[in-house]
Image (tube, rainbow, N blue to C red):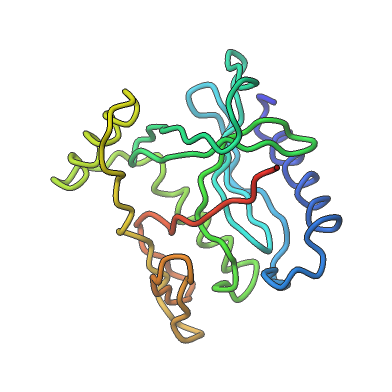
Length: 203
């Protein structure tokens, strides 16, 4: 699946099916949201993009023409470098999609007041994803740790404690239960990395 538009359409179709067949009635759903793919594009020969659903928001990476992910174990973590920073993806598999890798931005999604708000958060992430940033001392340390992980060396995991802040205009400050990070809901978003949560994987 090396065409970004086709990938986005396939992703929406597959997750709408998951929504209606597997997720219906589950309390974590934010019923103000719908399944939507955003910003699907090619990066280093692979298609990446953001998937928004009523229960999660993920960056998704699909295998390129020369990738064989068939032997990758579900749940395996892999590091991928982007101009902005390095992200740790998880191997998943879904009906209608096959093997893919995902990086979770938000889960659950009850911080968002409507679909436009979720789209704004996703776009804010995409706006900075491909932007080269001057590394701070902390980023350099994190990159060194990432290199160690990629070589299979024992090391402390990179701390993801520098999350996005959604600046308030309409509501109070809800808390993402997975991290305790306060997210102030609004139209204007900071240019920081969004919250790392969890992703639904196929058993």
